[in-house]
Image 1 (cartoon, helix red, strand yellow):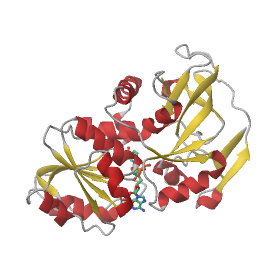
Image 2: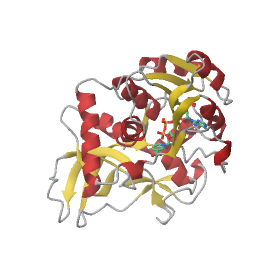
Image 3: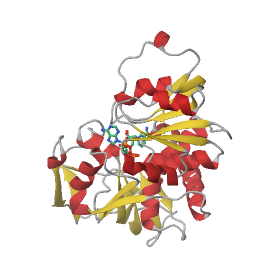
Image 4: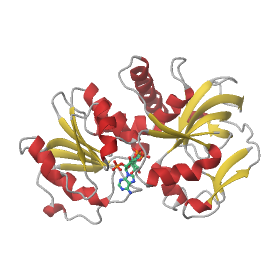
Amino acid sequence: MKAVVMKEVGGTDVMEFVDRPEPVARPAHVVVEVAAAGVNFMDIGVRQGMAWTDIPNPKVLGVEGAGRVLAVGDGTGEFAVGDRVAWVYAPGSYAQRQSIPAASLVKIPDTVDDRTAASTMMQGLTASHFATDFYPVQPGDIALVHAAAGGVGLLLTQIIRLRGGRVIGRVSSEDKVAIARKAGAEHVIVDTDGRFADEVLRLTGGEGVNVVYDGSGPKTFKGSIEALRRSGTFCWYGPVLGGPGPLEIMNLPKSIKIGYATFMDHIHTRELLLDRTKQLFDWIEDGSITVTIGETYRLADAAGAHAAMASRATTGKLLLIP
Ligand SMILES: NC(=O)c1ccc[n+]([C@@H]2O[C@H](COP(=O)([O-])OP(=O)(O)OC[C@H]3O[C@@H](n4cnc5c(N)ncnc54)[C@H](OP(=O)(O)O)[C@@H]3O)[C@@H](O)[C@H]2O)c1
């Protein structure tokens, strides 16, 4: 079968479209025909040697997708051949077929198509955690959402709106404004220099926002702090794009709450995985949220998808279609 591997740590040139052995259904594992694989910043981080270094190279990239069960190993009673399933945090999804621990799989409802399901796992679960657990948005709250036209940003904006919150978005170019607005952002600031805080304060009558969601790298950190109101919450989440460096706690505004929200810590049990994906699929089914697929790429063009994502040109979810 065909797959995309990284032969070593590096740029997109280390990605190769190669033949790999067919996966077999080991105990507690299921072999899946991949219908769509999600592209995530995390994959760029893996390629750059920031994560999953314990898996030897060459390794198949990708951690998210949706498809159909081809074979089941012992101890996977919940799943049968033919089931439509989705997964996240299972390495090796940039492939035609993948062996996945059954514990990482969820069944996809009939009303949700494969591409939508594949687009929902990482970014949807991340966004739902941010707005419902990390900072449970209350009616009337104002949130600042960075990269508001990206995969996380579009879903996060809709979930905040669903909870009665209001959204100020920040994007890097004018062409992303309409996309962020369509998802429910009331105001969208275009900025790449970290100079958005004054505009946020102006839009909020000098008060600032209740919560900032920032996964956009070191440049936005200072402005995000300045955009917070008294006792505001800073949800930081961007390990691949980089952190602010060492912080002196006594130099931070008093009484703010600041934390690093990570996917694996909030979806850390099977019950949580099932519960939170059900919530997302229900929202998709009843039209409460819409998943936007910005671009699909052939599996062989995974390097092109990585380059596009890093160039800040993309919106919504990027998928690879094997
Ligand atoms: N902590 C967690 O659990 C978790 C889970 C998922 C993702 N993440 C993080 O969330 C962020 C978004 O990742 P994603 O895969 O979900 O994709 P995404 O939401 O689609 O984000 C892509 C957006 O990031 C912005 N961006 C791209 N390159 C950038 C750069 N060099 N500097 C600043 N901003 C840049 C762009 O928005 P603009 O050009 O409009 O700024 C782009 O639209 C990443 O930092 C990723 O590590 C964290």
